[in-house]
Image (cartoon, rainbow, N blue to C red):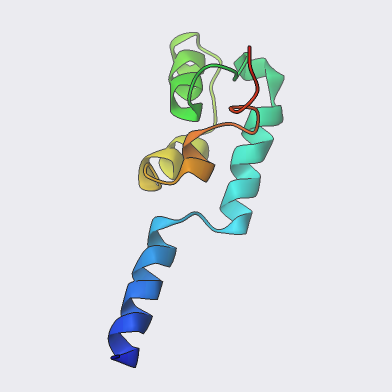
Length: 84
């Protein structure tokens, strides 16, 4: 087993996953009711709907959603597992 390649692979995985402070920003977006409900849609869909409605959602949130678009902790809101 090559330690260096394992380390590079681990670092690569970290780059694909949002960090705790970034997840906190997304959680605060979930809690911000001025952007409308977040059940039944992804965070990016909610962000885009808010933008379309002129609600000025934070661009930081969109940047994180696009950067980590494969991370389920980023894609879905805190309530995505709850039935509508």
